[in-house]
Length: 154
Image 1 (tube, one colour):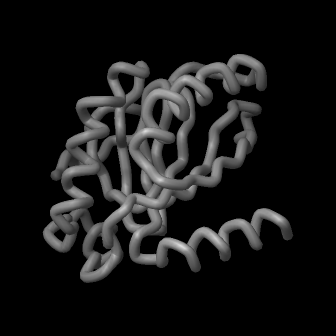
Image 2 (tube, rainbow, N blue to C red):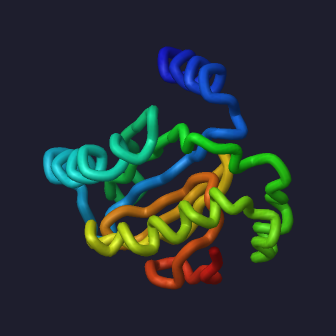
């Protein structure tokens, strides 16, 4: 309930078109909350808080006990208008905005520094990134590495 209110407030403040959803998971089998917290704090401190004006992060465990995080981020630009979710599902990324493409490029450069690769990103729907962290957000597929094969774009 409280989370829902926080999400509503964030979307109201920044606009849905400026919101991305990320899922961050670890490449290795991290089940210890303290270790996961240490790793996510490093990414939040050194990247997320500097890059995005606002975010909401929630820890979740997978069925196999691995820890991952879901984030809603205010990207500071419209990444949703004109974005064709159905086309992206078919691996057609032509409707991705220039800003969204710049996000993909940023994460391709940045993720390896955190032992990560970015797999997906899209406008307020789902982004994925794999390695140390995995993204499921509003940016579309952005890397070929990780457990899930994706088409490189951006």
